[in-house]
Image (cartoon, rainbow over all chains, first blue to last red):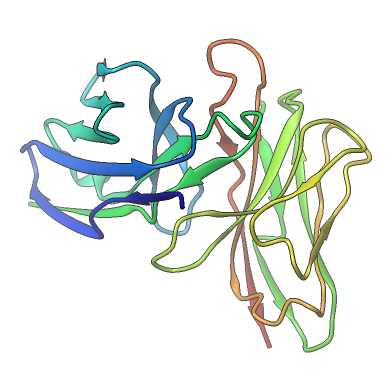
Length: 112
Length: 115
C-alpha cells in the first residue's frame, strides 16, 4: 500500500528551530512536496525535492533521502505566523504524474 | 492576478439534494483536481482532469461527478448518493510544464455541510 506518516502535532517556541519529519511508502517516486495550510485556508506550496539532499529557501529547508523514504522540513527563526499545518506529499511515478498522495499533516503551534 | 476561484465558500445540502461546487482558474493550467479534506486525514483525490473533455476517477469518486467542458472550469457535483458529504473540498491545478510542472495550486476551498 501507499502511505505517508508525519507527526500529528508539534509545539515550538518563537525564534527557535523545528524539524517536521515525514516517512513515505509509495509505488514509484517522482518528487516530494511540502505545503503549508493555515486553518480553514488552502494549502500553499513551500518546497520540492526530487533528488537526495537539502533544498534551502529562506527560513525553510527541506531534506530528502529516497533510499530511506524520509524527508524533513526545517523551519528556522520561528514566527507566530508559522503556526499552521504542514503537509507532506509524494508524487508517484507510475500514475502518469497526475496523482499525488498527501499525508494527514502536522499541526505546528508556535508559542511566545 | 492569476489564481483559482472556488465558490461558494460555505454550502449546505439537504437530504437527497445534489449540489455543485464551482472551480475556475485563469492560470492556463491543463490539469485540474478535486480533493476532499476531513479532520485528521490527508487530502483524498476525488476526480482529476488532464485536458478538456477528459477526466478520471480518483480514490473516492463514488457519489461525485465532474465535467470539464472548458479549460478554465472544473465543477464538482456532490450527488445524493454521497452519504457523508460533510467535508472541506479543495480544487487544485498544476502547470504541467516547466520546473514547477507538478506543484499544485489550490483554491480557497468550499466547506460543505449537511442540514
